[in-house]
Length: 257
Ligand SMILES: [Ca+2]
Image (cartoon, rainbow, N blue to C red; front, side, top):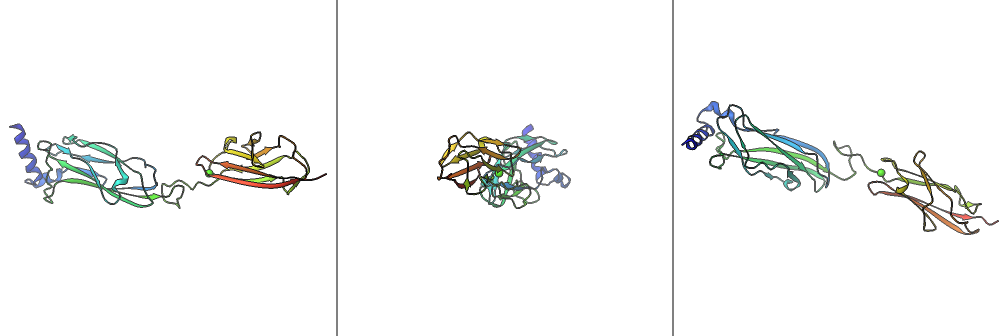
């Protein structure tokens, strides 16, 4: 008996039998969300929309199975499973979503929230359109290239590879058989550490170098005396946290006496 009465009431309201009651339709807020620039294959921060069954509404509503439609629906994720939740008059439900762009360029999708009659589980008909009542928020954004940016809002600055240069020997000849070799290795985005740097002499890795973070200087001496009249190549690489590597090489000869 009670249930029948409520169904009749709900239908009457949503059929617009009483024009004043039409204002008590559930709402979704906001109607549009721009997520801005999001790096490709990186999940955005969550954004939220709120479904409200307004105070003054005379019937409960039930949220149906949420869906995403539109050209980039597959890139968006509904983080809050809310299907089946019933909202009494005055109650709200927040739905969180995120986007993980699969490609660069504009993104667009619609979140659709069907509104059901909790007693029948059937869609409530929007009295204004005669169509099943479904609330929609349009989500937009832009997939941007990793490390790219070009000033798109919300885009991290470009990452650049470390810069490396060999300072000493300055020329292509050295007198000493154990010459001091000095290089500079720095990164524009981060403070490098010795573990980011590799030093090779004639292709063999040297681990006895020092790296001074304050001056960005790499310094070492060969373990063994170099041979006079022979040519040597020193190679120094530096790799940043993102895996970008910069390097420098210098070839020099040990002078004959
Ligand atoms: Ca860098």
